[in-house]
Image (cartoon, rainbow, N blue to C red; front, side, top):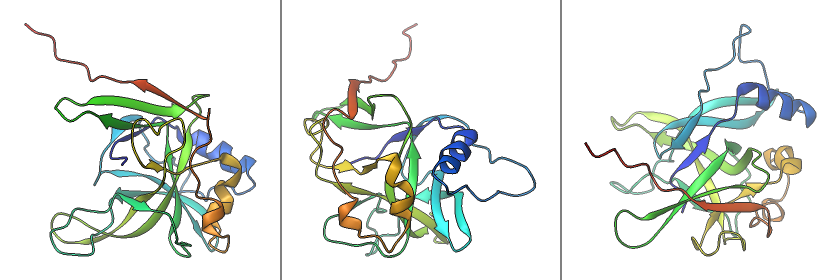
Length: 204
């Protein structure tokens, strides 16, 4: 289950990618780009960039990672199983440069960095909905959609977030398109996994 990912994507890369796909991002306002500093780790409940469709086009917003749970005191929903659902509302893209999985039963667990084999940034299939802040206020939020793992990552977890090929990003945002034809494991040879140990503080 993905609970840690990174995003080093500059705003200009979003503009270029979606212009090339024929669906330019809506302007954020008076000629000012949003502040999207590179982040090696994004954790549940953090704000993160999300791309979603509106009636007038597509926009980039920053939403909270984690949908409100269905029962009191349950944790926020950061990952949601994709199987058997069509997701006719709330589809979104969650841009990322890489994500992490952890193996082992004792702390510290081994940390593995997973990224595209060509090191290009990508988008997870996501779903927007209602979230909740620690003080109980309602906010917009998102979760990642997961499927069974592809061959590249099966040794590290029994689920994987859906990494959408670039040529179907805009198709996924069209809620009239059947979801289950789009939500698939990453094909063999598309992802690279490398061990990513955390740096230890120097011993004085």
